[in-house]
Image (cartoon, rainbow, N blue to C red; front, side, top):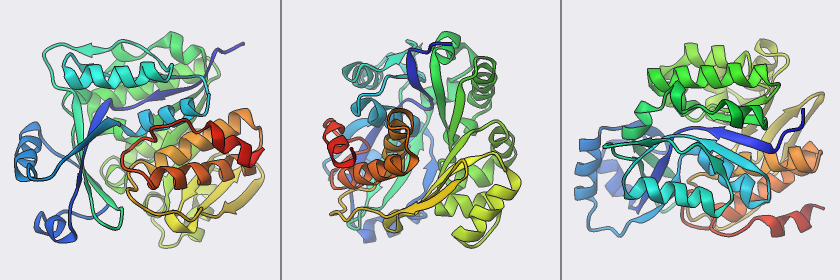
Length: 329
């Protein structure tokens, strides 16, 4: 079957609101550093009031959407399945997709509020995320596009989708469609919080997944282990057919694709904001895997892209990634 789309994402449609704060300000909020927490829309309003003295940066966000954005900025053909509200943030989100020629099903929630992620960035570049899902809580089976999944070589889903019953059902529907149309499945574990809170769903989903993306903490949480080496071995034991990419920050990434297992070093860079680094790594890796047909080159490309990204502010890289291809080829 000839497919016109290389990668179709499924995930929360979010607009990021970023604040650069001090370590002391973060500690005063009593939040676990570098993790994600779900908050109510009222909590988001209260947070904005508390941080109104800080100039905020606004950009498109959402884990899977960030990955799809990076994939498209390399020149890959992509699509995105999500839902936003009929407000300014919703229009902003879809405009970002259109700028990069990303196809989408026009899912609009009338009378709602588009989801936002409040990103608290400390001077070391680490980010703590407080997400008000709002519209994303209503993502359901009706927002899935059978045609887009049918036309895609790969489906890329974020773990955050399992956090509400309706969106989790939608993900299961998307997975069944992917299997029906021989669309391969990539999955991002997303966060330790997601694994701990929705372990049963995550473990069920992984049985149908071809390629897993996670960081080292997520890998250890997923396998109930205390080292990256043990976590890798456990993943192979539990899911023998599963390929995986385990990112390790400044220590690079540990990768298993088919019969090949290897590590890739992280590129040195000036860390400004680590928001979305794993998402961009995944988008670059998927582009390399699908277009360079070489997992080692894909990993090197991903390392370069992540380094370039974290030297800027925001969950997405504002320019094209295409110039990085000349370094790899």
